[in-house]
Image (cartoon, rainbow, N blue to C red; front, side, top):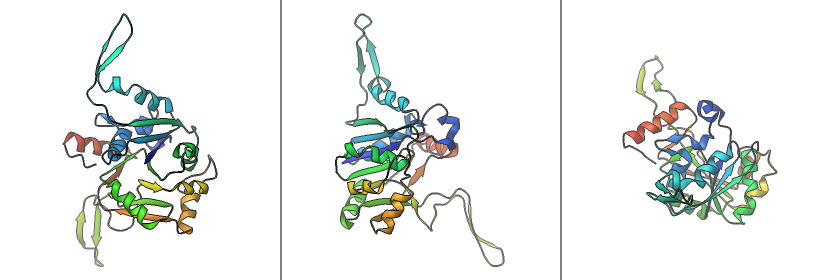
Length: 253
C-alpha cells in the first residue's frame, strides 16, 4: 500500500526554521521529522512513499538523493571521483519525490498524485506529526466499514493547565497540560479509496474543506479514534518537547 505524505506547505508558524528549510525537514533529535513519520509506517512493513513537495522542494529532494552519503561514513577515490559509503543504516524504502507545486493546496497536492496512486487504496498523512498509532488497526478499521475515507481522530495535549472549578470558584482539580478528554481533532493518518479523488476539483482545493466536508455529508467519512500519543510540530515549543523526549530516551512514537 502506498503512503502519501504532504510535505509542500510554507510552515509559516515556524518561520524561524522554515525561512531556511521546509517544515518536514525540521530536525527532531538527529533526523528530520518526515523521517520519523516514515519510520512509523515502516514499522508495519509500509515502505512505498510518495512525498508531495512544494515549498523548498529541492531541499527534501537533495536529502533523499544523498541519503546514503549523509547517513554514513564514506570513502572518496580522488582519482576516479567514486564515492563508497560505509553504510550504517539503509532502510528498505522506495521514496518518490513529486513536486506538486509551490502554491498548491493540500487537496490539489493529493490530486496531482492520482497517476501514481494507480486506482488503489492508499494512506495519507501530514509531514509534521508523530504518533504511536497502530497503522494496521487503522487499515483494518477502514476495510471493515467500506466507506471512502478514514481519518484518525486524536485528543491532543492541552496548551495550558486545566482547572476544574466549582460554583463557588473553588478549584477542585488542577492538571498541568493534560491530554484533552472531550472533543476530537483531525490527526491525519488517513486511509483513502481512490474514488475520493473525484471530490477534489484542482490545485486550489483545500483537502480539509470541500472534499472532506462533502465526504462527511455523503456518509463516506469515518473516524478511527486513537486514544494514545499524538503530537504535531506547530511551534518551537512543540519541537523542543519532542527533542527532550528523544534526549531522555523517552521517545513514544
